[in-house]
Amino acid sequence: MSFIVQGKSVVKKFGDFVALDHVDIDIENGEVVCIVGPSGSGKSTLLRCINQLEKIDGGGLWVDGELVGYRIAGSALHELDDKQIARQRLATGMVFQRFNLFPHMTALENIIEGPIQVLKRSPQECREQALELLERVGLSDKANAYPVELSGGQQQRVAIARALAMRPRLMLFDEPTSALDPELVGEVLQVMRDLARSGMSMIVVTHELGFAREVANRVVFMDAGQIVETGAPEEILMYPRNERTRGFISAVL
Ligand code: ADP
Ligand code: MG
Image (tube, rainbow, N blue to C red; front, top):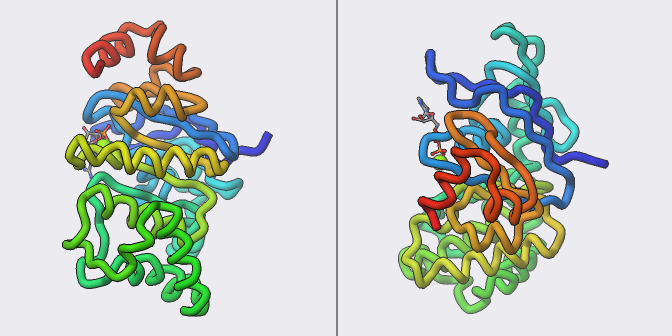
């Protein structure tokens, strides 16, 4: 079994506040894991630690077989330097709630920026790949559109294409449809569904329990910085064992 993410007793603090409280999480290559849980439970923090936007304060975290951080009792046993972090962060693509496209660049320019500037790939090759990606997310006709000319759902699909252009081994989604008008949610979920079927390893923080039930291999329920329950979608969403999970599921449905 090969893991794309392994977390052992991960602790993350903000001052005295414990945002991740000894989180154990293993995600296999090709797995699609949905994380659900109330606001403030640490879902975004977990993704940000995996993507190394935050440093962990305890435990061990590996992404794609490489050690991201390992700490015991606050003393740094192992920490990557900025260069290693930058290189390793390339293994993960992240899509946020707010479509953070560069406003002064077209959809195509947004997609080719990273591969050209960071990966130093040829502009011609990057343009070809970008056009393929735009087709994959159903936006072939929007290559030259600026973000302001696109709907929220279209912008989010460009954001997914832009992340994929870096050829990540893992995609992280942090409530990618929460800022969208209801009628635009489906088109973004469809792109994510296709991506899951293509075998991409994905961690998706979402309140879309229908999507989680249909697409996820596993659902993780978080509360108060802890993983309370994890299991197959039907187990967690239909027959949750934990009281906290039950309360959350019935409130969202
Ligand atoms: P979720 O994504 O589940 O809503 P977050 O991971 O964003 O939760 O936040 C978990 C907790 O950590 C919240 O109580 C939040 O206020 C706190 N938190 C998150 N980021 C910071 C930060 N940069 N500084 C201080 N507290 C933070
Ligand atoms: Mg969040």
